Image 1 (tube, rainbow, N blue to C red):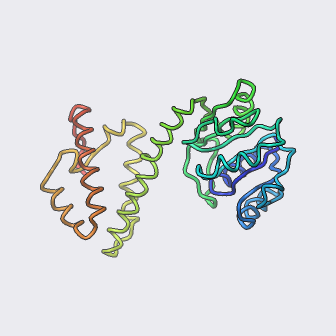
Image 2: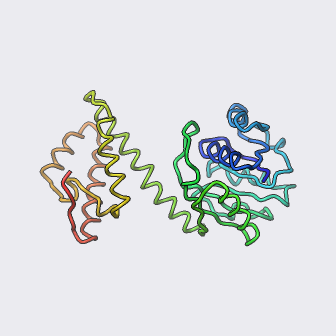
Image 3: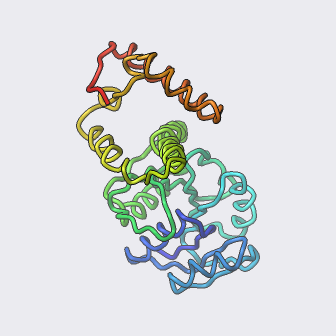
Length: 265
């Protein structure tokens, strides 16, 4: 398929490179800055532009990989005059109907965290698709299956819940890593001492349900340990609040699941 990318960020970069590798032709990359557009286009050997007026008309598919706040506005600018094209966005939280003014549209949502410089095995990434009709759905499916072995049809509402779950499983977890790194750095301890712990935690949930893999003082509601640790956070009231909120949530979920305790951390 002939494809135009609207957006040149992390997701756009990894998806565009994977689609090119799969044999698709990337015609053009649009970004609000020519520097960003050129950086990706140079890897794809295609045209770059920072002008919506210069976006080409002859693509089969226009993939929007941009912030939710600008998606609708950009779509309204690109859709006119491209009645035969398929319009897709990659957002987890935006409805498929954002393209309602187009004749053919859908969603191609790869659920993964991306970095421009970090290679990913796209074939392992779950991709969630939706479309305005059966013909469009078949085209989106064909496109998704050209790069991923895990393609699922889901509704907008299910995709929103998936995105929410991903925020908890990825973004919030990584923020906890960042807080851990700050605490360690204050004592000149390298964060890599945590790697065996974080790796083992990640391995566990491949065999156990996350709630069953939970360990630590909050699971036992060990106030002796928890009070000492919150005292260490007096200079960081926001971190203390996170600690207390997370601890309550861990304990309450464990009680809902039957109060089963796992190995002590």
